[in-house]
Length: 348
Ligand SMILES: [Zn+2]
Image (cartoon, rainbow, N blue to C red; front, side):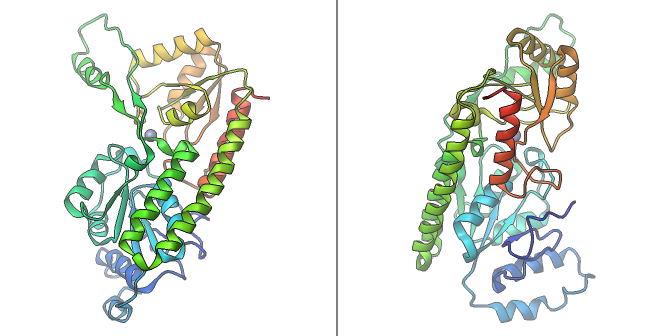
């Protein structure tokens, strides 16, 4: 795992696996995060004082928020400000769709004052929330108004040799809710307001501060939304061909048409049918740019590009940051994506 400039000492974002604990963290709750880390690494220097430190920190009222993956962790940080420590379950650089929780993740979920998650994106997190934190969970999807559904492209099956694959695709053909709301900045703002309301019920004394933080966040996101609206208003290409279908809400907000080679979750090896359909779509619409992403192999996009003569370009689904990301937080990577989209979609 890599260390990110994001998690510097000015941040309250705690990745307890790497024990990069910010210096200004609140004592009580983050020490309990430290004790969690120590439970799995008793030989580490610095863990021996945990029990005493826990006792010393008792009575501190700072919250611990467990967020399922990066965009929710960033959003939680913005809304909670210095009133909480935010722990991301999905580690830096891990692909959240497939992420399996460790026992420590489950323990952190059980201990948190609030758990911010997005149902259906990460089945393992859904199960942990249901078992450990049903009374403290904040459902980001409910606040985001997940109005988009995803339906797999039509597949024609000419032979019966791939019965298993056909069976899986039959299931994929049923429309399912698209969870990737964070590519629409105004949906992020709505979730920020709802999270502020939720935190105000957990920590009533600071209700006004959560509300004010969410209002600041909304202003920043509205500015970002305006940049996308202007930047993507006049583009030669409206078709957005991506390696997985992570950009539906972006396409919906800014009048683009998404064609994901893989479905709602990244697939390293999409079916031959899926590749053929993507190739046909690219040819039919004269698509010049196919977007690959940061956390999964570019092979899928490369395959279609090679077949069609299109170029490939990076577009970050912002499902997790790495040191390869084109920015150190959500806003920076969104703006980098906008610049890539303006080039790739030939916008003026
Ligand atoms: Zn995704």
